[in-house]
Image (cartoon, rainbow, N blue to C red; front, side, top):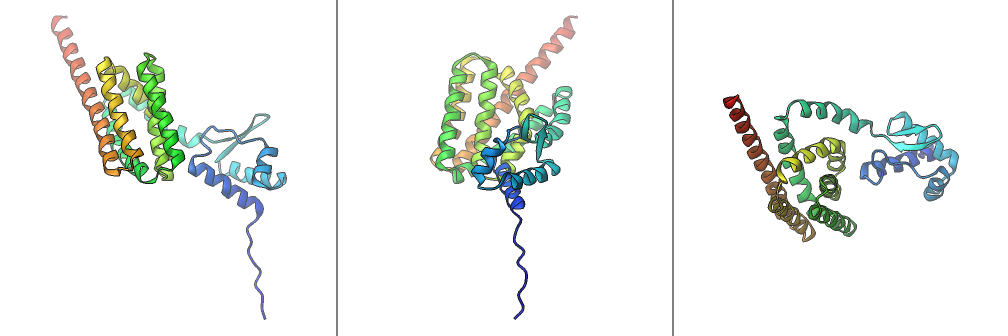
Length: 250
């Protein structure tokens, strides 16, 4: 009888695969620092030499970055390489703002729909916390806090969709989205009434996801982005009228 040699996976490759999975799932995010080598080896139940080899492999794939004396981090290179040129273009060409809104309309509507179908109890708890922080931010007057809470709320929805690309695409454009939300809030959140409308829209998205109403979650997300799009369009038209008026009297 002929026996064939079994091709068993090497321990470092198994470790690397586990770490890759954590990155894909979003439990390890760009910029996150890995736990201390000793702690991570204990957590994974592996030897430190095997862990070092696995980390070295992921560093060579540019998924991790080792900093001398500073630990090992999940790379943010993919995020930076995508966002940087678009960030500059958005600053130089404000008309791209509508394209960003169109992208958000497509992405976030689908993410909300999937989140309503797939969110775990832990996801719903995180989403409830994100909504509570957003609600508190809108009740205050700190615009930076509003922006940060708004982005965090929408990112939590994307992560709750449990589609690796949704979470990572939205994370990759987070800085671009952050700038877009900052511009949006600066231009449209000018009254308590508008703030209340925005919060009501966020509430509808949150409630639809929590109650597992996928179609309603999609429609609520679309209505929210549509509202923002309309208000920004109105703001742009108002600015153009002011510019024409100034030229007329100059």
